[in-house]
Length: 190
Image 1 (cartoon, rainbow, N blue to C red):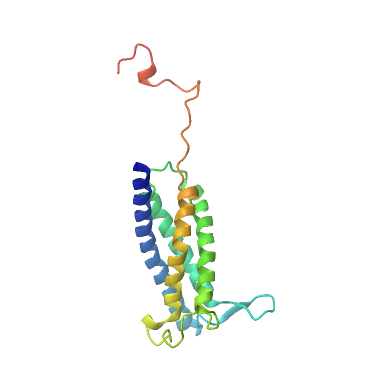
Image 2 (image 1 turned 60 degrees about the vertical axis):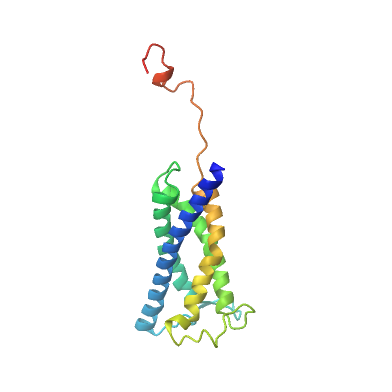
């Protein structure tokens, strides 16, 4: 039962950190969208790069979401390291961040696929343009697609981080050459 409560506690903390990271992600995505429009009249729907001569493109919203992911990923890693998984034996910041980043990239791929499906007007799960008509902030399709894509990727992100990036190091048995502890040394009072 203790292991279940520890895992649930970690999941709740991970969710709270993820919630703060979601706010960071959303804020950075909004900032990217606004800056692109104010500085270069670039819309999130504008294509950036054509994919191999097909009808498919990498669009600016993919770029904005990727930038927001990087900022939020660093934010989340630091908070999870300091709070959620603080009892786990830590390695150097960079060595611990790399598995977290790779896990995050997997979640980013899920987010980008989800976002593409939600943003595409021809997708069966696309957000309806009559409701999300970009007339106000709360009716902006890009903002809602970003929020939904984060929620969809969160469970995968938690499980992989728990099992890989923040896994507990296995206990190492004492080696015969390691110094004796006071309670095992003969003649040493406890």
